[in-house]
Length: 500
Image (cartoon, rainbow, N blue to C red; front, side, top):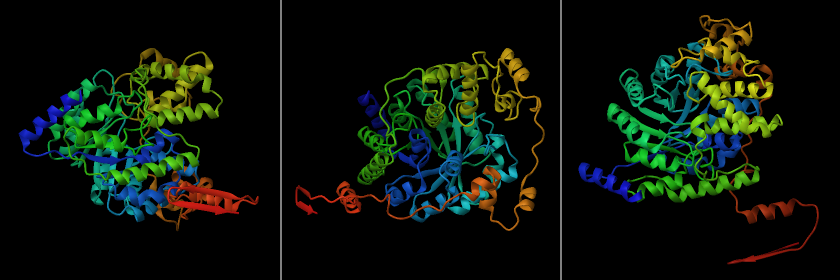
């Protein structure tokens, strides 16, 4: 297989007269830690290594999305806008990117354009230079206001197109959506986003070149996949061979498993088959060493290459969502129900019209699946979000909901959820009246999470607690702090240490 790819790249180089450069976009601080650590990486974990990551040669760095906002406030008691500012102080050369999930915010529910536009504006004001937008129903109309705001403020826009295995999601659909993004909205990057890692090699070989041909040189084609099926690295390499300009990766050891392909391995393999990759391998290794030591210190997992797992083609469950599901079932004492819940997720997804399993639909589908497993009778208990979904609150559904299932959802769902959504009214005038005299960052956070949570936020610790240090230094520091006395003798190549 490697020789076959080498021949394809060599033929392209001969035809164009130059080697093509494949760029890497880093997703360690956003999706890597989301997929493996359930988004529990703190801001002070990121700061000591940010400058090295800035110098590593990434074309862009995805730094934050709404999931990180949620985790920062709800679980870590940290200000996500402060995270952006502190990272920007250290990441001065590489554009930082934030991801916006359509017109959805806290609570996974569509909101007015005025609050979404302010959310985009404040991230840019705090240091974001690229905005990635995506709509899980592939409804570009839901993205128009955010795109316009980002471009007006000088940020480049990436349009994410979530991959799905379902009737009607053929190459032509993705080509049309990509072309619309470039021609109507003027986006600078189109990202084929395979959050569940369910693309196949054969599909990459048709879909990637079709999208690239449609957008040409007017926009960069970026490829995003995950490693849940074990095929992520191979898919990434194939995508580059067949036209992708950049690949989203995470720095090993926050790669693999539920996460993305590893930056170090993808760079080596791309060079091996004939591409140029402008990343600093030495710095990537230093970054990897830091995150490995941090994972051990914080008792967090590292990514392990997965065996081939075809069940993911049924559940189509994203890596970040998978880690959160595992965490939630563990907290609820339901780890023994994991296999039953995953099987039910596959059934519920199809019955709900096979939505793309990116936010918010993994949460919506899994909530219904958990209710079905716990109650024995399917759709006896219906979360409000499920009823809102089938009633069109999130927009027009690409595929219809199973008629019998829809009847059960409407019958058993809350009567407080109307069968048709009402118009979404602007919210900023009321917020500004309620919160007089505070900045827009704080206003947004109070709107999203409530006063109690925002009052409890703590400033980020920016000392050297998480700085990169040699293990021997940590050992000596620990001994110095110990109240017990002992004689320590250590020696190694080129050094000897004796302490009482």
